[in-house]
Amino acid sequence: MPRESRQKLLIDEMRRNGVKNISVKFSGRRGFHLGVAGGGFPKEVNMNPISKMFPELPQKIAFYLSEKIRPELAKKLIALDPLLEEKMKEENGALNPYNVLDVEQNWSVRHLSGCLMRSTTRLGMPACRLTRRI
Picture 1 (cartoon, rainbow, N blue to C red):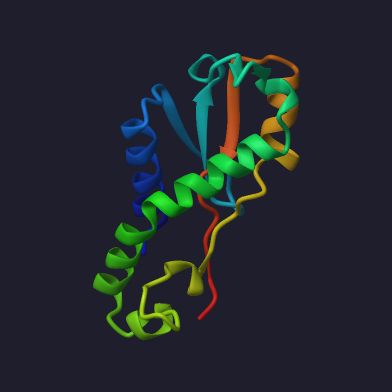
Picture 2: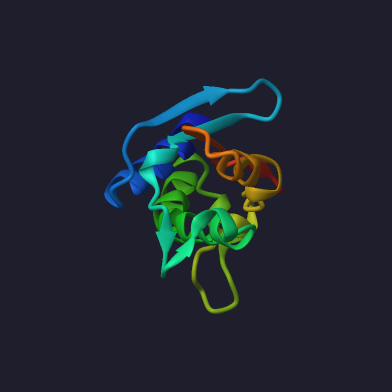
């Protein structure tokens, strides 16, 4: 599956959740990264400043987005290669595209925490660094 398709799934899901001003850049070897304007996030969540919610907040965002795109990602992978369906099957019969792809979910360590702590206007996060595990 082309990387652009994976990022599009994430961008579409973020837009459905009200995130605006999303940019995409290619960083070379590490793949595509999504940028979201810092003003796109609330200053607080449950009366807690988001600058103090690391690494939990970006990890929860990554997990949420990964789960939301799971069904569509599985469909796109099967359309690309029908043989992947069997490799994605869990014991309960559900399809898990992450059985054949890795998704970076530890976004905060290098990307988000420093940006938010310095109150910059842009946040950088790896969109979906996926590598085949077949």
